[in-house]
Length: 300
Ligand SMILES: NC(=O)C1=CN([C@@H]2O[C@H](COP(=O)(O)OP(=O)(O)OC[C@H]3O[C@@H](n4cnc5c(N)ncnc54)[C@H](O)[C@@H]3O)[C@@H](O)[C@H]2O)C=CC1
Ligand SMILES: O=C(O)C(=O)Cc1ccc(O)cc1
Image (cartoon, rainbow, N blue to C red):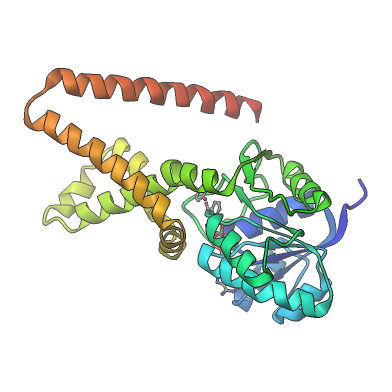
């Protein structure tokens, strides 16, 4: 297949940037995939592992070479990155397509509007709903996005050709691309992704502080392991997400707190019917979700 573009630039070569680079290289999306980052060791490792073809430590050199830029740093760094690169590209007289992978979209939209005076036509924000509790280029995988969803939040100002390029890039990785409004994205992800991470961190931290923590962890069963896997995720990444999506995360945490308080009251008053009602309704919803997951994994 002919390459779609000449050069893809990944800014931030970690789990997601590295996985995207691997996938695009394997599928011949561009002639070359290059990296830029603040830690030369990760970029060198990326070249050694065949994740990228080469890298730049100078941002202007990297920007001058790119036809497509993918910002793949932690969420708050990504907002700073957009504020840096939009004026620098304007100075260089270049308009490559720009996209990102960050877990929150509202702060990036705001950063872009602040830097450019409106949404730049060549910037299409995106978010792959795929990943893990691991970080870094060593954890990157070529098949990470296969049969996973990628949400794009196109803006009315976007150039249709920019949207098409970003969509094609993700489809080539094996992902299913869906469009969403920025505010819907941030509310939905606050509920399904950001809240569970807050709960997992809070649960593990609460138990780790307990005087019985050694026994608690020694005798923990599979349920504890399943519930808490994501508490091994990168603390910087999740601090950034909680700050960037503060309002929606608070809404989700408050909703959960109300439900937990209701359940607490049912336990305290031995309200057997109340507990059974909650558990039965939750089990039905979880079982339905499991069927959806099963159908998706059969596609792969
Ligand atoms: N880990 C996951 O499962 C998922 C993460 N995301 C989002 O993707 C983005 C990247 O996450 P991961 O790949 O997991 O993180 P990571 O920690 O594996 O990679 C981040 C990369 O950004 C680089 N970086 C950090 N600060 C930088 C700076 N100031 N300048 C240049 N490079 C810098 C790091 O050196 C690293 O290579 C985050 O915004 C995250 O919210 C999205 C979907 C899933
Ligand atoms: O490890 C897991 O199960 C995840 O939930 C990974 C993940 C983390 C952040 C995202 O924005 C999307 C997916």
